[in-house]
Image (cartoon, rainbow, N blue to C red; front, side, top):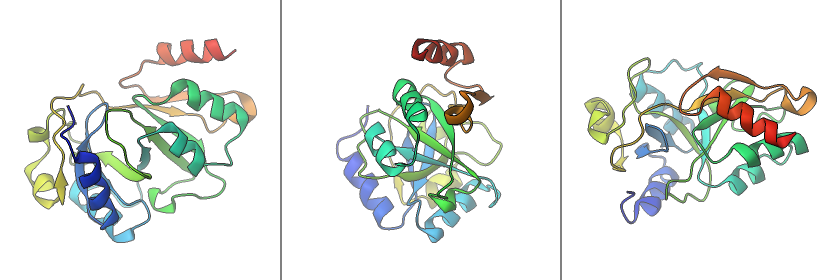
Length: 198
């Protein structure tokens, strides 16, 4: 259950250049303004995450994600409409180099629907120390991360299994897809979705 006013508080924190701990559809995450170098650096420092390691861009509505990436081809857009929102991090080709602070030639995209409504994207990563266990409850987020964050949003107990990472970078041209990391959504479930697309 997302506490009342969480969307507004989260949006204000991100807009002010802060870093927040918040619930997703899988595990607790950290988020910040994807365009603020200072905020992204703080998020990475809280996690102890290597600066070169990419993060994901998260949206709370699929139409916001599609609007932010107008260059997506018809086949890829169809796949995203079938797969999202859900417990997936989708890796997309990024020829326009959008969200450069997220790093990498591929852009990781998350879309969640848990009762939060943000007006735009956030840079997001799991709220744990790099390489450590994911947090399914707010109190499982390491104390130094909670102390260093500007906002804590308690969404209760979450499923606790990280998102599946799905590479769709070659989907537009070849119809190819690949599960990079299996998590909350199984490869079989993804294959079934693509089977319905034809």
